[in-house]
Length: 233
Image (tube, rainbow, N blue to C red; front, side):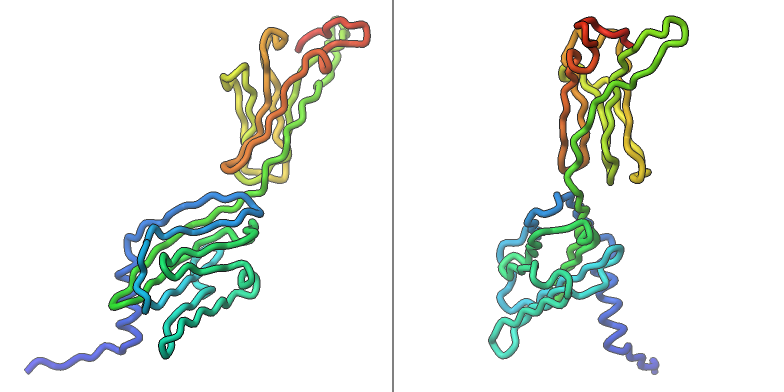
């Protein structure tokens, strides 16, 4: 006769969760700090008796933040996270989760479990960004060693941050760009053109959720007190 092997219910439940999570698609969201954000599931009619769980973690979704279930015919929804609790709202019809006044500290992985006869799992990676700063254009003044004439060298700068880029545009065409993973340093980008007086030039700072633009004013930046154009570059 074959030997009878029994699997502990807890191990069986863990194995099932691992199987239902394997290969799952992670939806990536990029949001602006301070906004009200809804993590949409795309569902329109979750079973009324479904057990709904939301988990969160900066790296792995291992902290339970929402638990909604039917107990003796009554819907009981608990919000566990001390930091998030007062800003969360669950939609039981869709399973979607709304976060009010989202902050950069709320970035991380959110995972939804909907339990009916089986477990369905959705994962969301949420990146929250501060609004990008407005770029500043100044004259990178210098003296040329031969003529000692004052020069005009437009230089754009902006406070760096997560996924920030800095670009120069000639009319609508981007002509140069820079970014850096070192957010402790400002970004600096000179305008390397021979005749910036010919066209409209703008400097644009951007991250995935916001942008700021500053237009180069040649008259203000590169003309001296006598009204003459300084030596360019």
